[in-house]
Image (cartoon, rainbow, N blue to C red):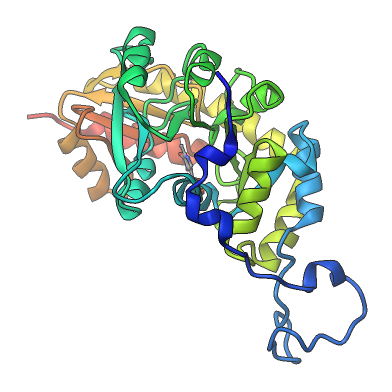
Amino acid sequence: MEFNLNNKVRPHLAGVKSYQTLRDSYINKQAVYLDANENPFGEFNRYPDGDPIQLKKKLAEINQAKTENLFLGNGSDELIDLTMRIFCEPTKDSILIMNPSFVMYEIYARMNNVQVEKLELNSGFQLEKDLFLDTVSKSQAKVLFLCSPNNPTGNSIDDLEFYIQNFNGIVVVDEAYIEFSPEDSAVKLLNKYPNLIVLKTLSKAFGMAGLRIGVGFSSIEIASLFIQLKPPYNISSESQKLALLQLNNLEVLKNNISIILKEKEKLKLGLEGINSVVKIFPSDANFFLIEFKDAQLIYQKLLDKNILTSLRHPSLNNCLRISVGNADENSELLKVLSEIKES
Ligand SMILES: *Cc1c(COP(=O)(O)O)cnc(C)c1O
């Protein structure tokens, strides 16, 4: 299939000029800054670097990618929204998503007045190839969102490349949890597929949800589109600085990931001993999707003890999604669960 990016981008964007700023060419230079109506006083008075090159270099190095293939968002959430705003014509175009999957794809589609088509996952929460090919042959969807490991089910999607290869639009592979998973990142497929966007985030495995940094990987052409069309200063200077500091201690971050993975195994053993647990679904992420006899009741009983969990998807009957916490949090969870009497 011939892929032509120009046919995928919303036509009116060809003529849209992004906000031009002198600043990025003068960053870190001694200069008299009278161009942006900033206040000359204060600790946070200057606008941040609009295309944070230091941070991008570091992220490229960590992900074995090139800086020019990388773009940043205020969380990967912003990049999901931008994907629709760049490729989908409101009221006309649609996106194709897995069901169940991350709820924000649908929420941003609705906000952008973009239609949503769904691919039902099978009982093992995998895509069915026949259903996929059949759906795609009838669909005009501009963007396919794949999420692996999938939220809220936790499993990795088998044979991702098949779906990337057989979709003639933009394919977004959302890898928010990939660092917890034994699977390879789809970043290594970028050279092969000009229609591929891989999204990662510093919010989950890297422990920086508060900094709001999402990372996109794609062809240089797609990356340039995002850089041009994103809000001009979408990563705050403090976030840039603090993320770089954290990423310079990668060993600490990696160690935290292995602690979480050990806690995850312990938590699984504990959950297997809980009476009200019907099924713990296989997870490659830092959470479990768990089926209970009565999820609503468990959810409420946990909430009564100030333990917050996530009551999932309408299509996931009697399931809660529960994150892996630290040792104390997980023990507290197991203690409360073991004391719940189901009437
Ligand atoms: C948490 C999550 C995100 C959003 O991450 P941010 O970078 O914090 O916006 C994206 N996709 C999935 C599947 C997630 O679970």
